[in-house]
Structures are given as structure tokens and as C-alpha cells.
Amino acid sequence: MKKILLLSTVVCLIFMACSKDGGSGTKPTITFKSYSIPFIVDSLVDQFDATFQVTDGDGDIQNKFNFRIILDSDPSTLEDSVFEPRQMPNIGAHKGSKVDAEVIYTLLASDFKFYDPNTKPDSLRMQVFIVDDEGHSSDTITTPKLAILKN
Image (cartoon, rainbow, N blue to C red):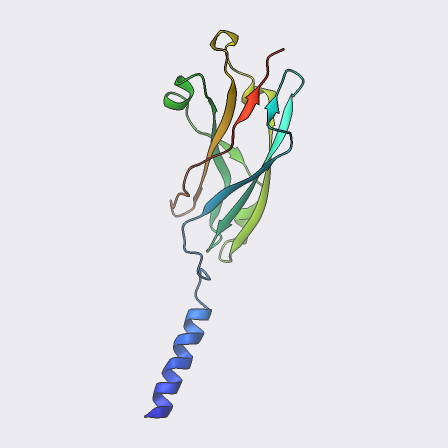
């Protein structure tokens, strides 16, 4: 009887250690890490990088992330703007294994210099989320503000 109990315990521990998601779950996650510039965008900034950490327990992340720019003085950017899909590196190639990757996305002037000068936006930020192949969506995160200095 003791041998059966001991064997059952060992089998359960092995099963838990070999589980597919390794404790991360099937919901992908994305977190903001940094910008490549100080927290200021002026007329000289034509591009900058935003760095994110992406994780997924089963590695079935689609190779894109969805983002939108929010201009803090322009409420229409939050209510009317749509999320745009952007290509990530081929991290979906890791299907079936855990993904823990740093993703660097380069924003070009066309991504963030679309505001009307009459609205006088004072800052911008991004909202970002990712989706996996089974439709599990990460939480939508909001990056820290970048001040807009108009020269």
C-alpha cells in the first residue's frame, strides 16, 4: 500500500513538472520595458524604439502585436482610433514551447506625428496587446507618457 501511495505521488509530481504551460498558463502576456529616447518627443525625433517583454506558456503567439497611439489632449484618439496590427519577429516559430522574448518595435514618424497642431497635444502613449492562435488575448497595457515638445 505504501509503495502504491509513493508511486502515485511520484507520478503526480512528474506530471506536474512536465505540464505543457510550465505554470505560465495559456494567456499570453506583454509588459512594457523601455523607450530608446528620454521621455520627450520633439520636432527632431523621427523614430524611436519601444521595448516589450512577451511571454506565452504554450508558444502559440501570432507574429503580430496590436497597438494604437493615444494623444492625451485629444479624446478622439482613445475613443475613435483602432488598434493596428504590427509584425513582430517570428516568435510564433516556438509553437509548443514556452516563449519569453524581448520585442523591440521601431515607431516611425508616421506612427506618432499625425496630430493636428491646433489640438496642441502635450503627450502621447501607446496601448498594446497580443493574441495567440487560440484567441487568448493578453491584457491591454498602456505605456508611460512621452511629452510632446512643439518647436
